Each structure stands twice: as structure tokens, then as C-alpha cells.
Image (cartoon, rainbow, N blue to C red; front, side):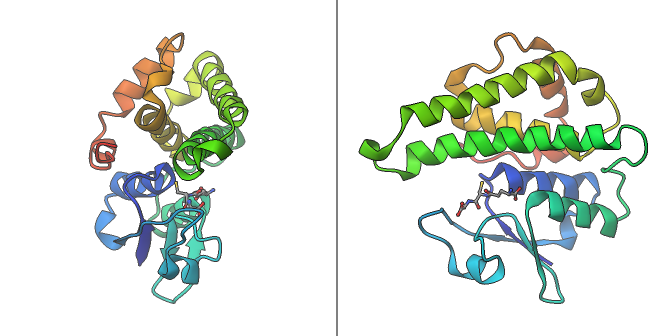
Length: 203
Ligand SMILES: N[C@@H](CCC(=O)N[C@@H](CS)C(=O)NCC(=O)O)C(=O)O
């Protein structure tokens, strides 16, 4: 299997962290691509018409895409326990969606600043996206710590990758202010070998 990959993508990082957690990182070859919404990598767009990473090309030629689909597939393939079933499972999925949604907003802000010419950038758009991030971080800190302190799941991985991405691209926004419980949780989760092994290179 081959994973279209970039060490900078938080969605890709979710998949690679999962592989480390399952001790299966050798089962998937990483193919690093440089792709943006304005300049798609041709081998990636041939495999995933949306030209987004992560995309997992299986040995039967089928490509799976979207990090939640890929993580669900790999967890099942390798008999993982990263998607709890039974009571609390949908809350857990919502927590994963919250981490992914923070990534969506934070990536959109970075694209606006990095990809669009300065005269086309919208400060209003960037601030609206940051409002969503900021509100979601507050809700994680105030309402979700009980779940985050439970057994490790993909929800934990998603939230941790999202927070690390906010640090990486938007560190000057000081997301830690007022979110002390989340800060302590993130520091602890970030020390896991799977997180250490997947740190993005310096921006
Ligand atoms: N919902 C998707 C989002 C994937 C995504 O947006 N990836 C970014 C990289 S961080 C990308 O490939 N961008 C290229 C583009 O938008 O063309 C997932 O969870 O996999």
C-alpha cells in the first residue's frame, strides 16, 4: 500500500500516527507529494480526483481518500481498537470531527495567507475561521476533557494533530491562553512515540 503524503499535513499525520500506534508503519510506503489547490500533483489527482492528501492506494489499485475513511479502514485491517464501539462511540466520532474541523479552519487560514495574492486575501475570512478554532478549543477545554482523558482513540489523535498544527501555522495566536486543561493534555499526548515520530519539519 502507498500513502500520498506530506509531513506538513495534519490530516496525513493522523494516518501516520495511527500506523505508529498500531505498530504497522512498515505496512505502508510513503510517497511524498507537493500539492496545493492551485497546483495539483498529477500522480495524486490520477488516484484521487479531489487531489487531496492523504490518499491511500491499495495493492488492488483502489485508492481510499479522506483521513477518516483511511483511518477507519486501517484500524479495521489491522484489528485496531482506535474506534470504540458501543456507548459513547458517537460522542467519540464527534470529538474526532471537532479535531478535523479545527484542521479545516486552520488549513483554510494558512491557504488564504500563503496561496492567494495579497490583494485577494480576506482578513474577514481569516478571522472568521479563527473564531471557529477559538470556540472549538474552548469547548474542548470546558466540555470534553473527560473524553480526552479516556482510552486512546482516533479522536485523541485528531485533536492532538489539530493542536500541533495550530502551533505550527498559527503559533502567534496563543491558543493556550485560557485553555489550561487542554494544554496539559496536549503536552502529555504529544510525548507519545507516535507523535514524536511524526513531527513536521520546521516551517
Ligand atoms: N477532509 C480531508 C481534507 C484533506 C485536505 O484538505 N488535505 C490538504 C492538505 S493539508 C490538501 O490535500 N490540499 C490540497 C488541495 O486542497 O488541493 C481529509 O480529512 O483527508
